[in-house]
Image: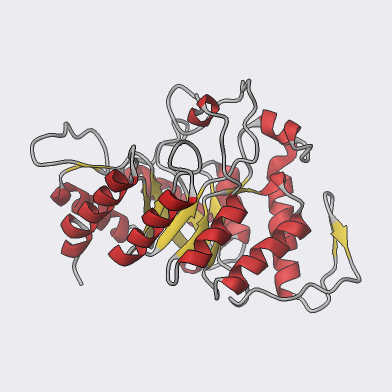
Length: 317
């Protein structure tokens, strides 16, 4: 099992000093993955429903801030040596696919092959409109086409593509990514279309556990979605075993003994968290991303340290 953590992209900790301290601490503590989330602009008025909490509100609207994902990831690559770099997730329709493929290839080259491309198709109509992105209602088709474009550019000596949203030919696309055949593609989302996209085009399925429409905060709920994912893989003549599984527990809370009224996965004492991780491993999940939220860098790094000393240190070897 690999473990990951995120960095702040808005608020008082979204600066180079705080981010550097967090990622270097994470690397020293033995974490495997660092994640960066994705928004380019935050509209002042948002009517779209945020899919990962009960009331549908988006916390980022309060500040309007957001560091750009891909440039932030490159900065992190420059100050780390071993951490995998995960876009978590990159909203595919937000950026031109050829330019995005070049930026991602550059990150992979300059990080010496440490990039994982987490990707999804977005939820905020207003941001699509502000960016003059392809139509929001076609975002699923756009996202699938863009993944195909990435693969074409990353793997072919003479890349050619004729699609509904982008076309190119007679170009040289170099350098290629370090990783072969290309950086791993982690497809986010919990819906049936997202599962189909992961089964057809992804190397890993990467859901978040807090989507009220598709709750995945128990082993039984997650097992049912994995079974559907595997069904879609078989429909695409693909061996389900070739798909890795990741999971984002963005509500994580490690509590002192007797202080937490446990109501779901990844809330509670260290022994309970260990049991939760064991259930994920039994389901074949390879990667777990956790949210070590805090109001200061020391609060965040202390929570990360406590997790490694009380939980991962006690995992079976």
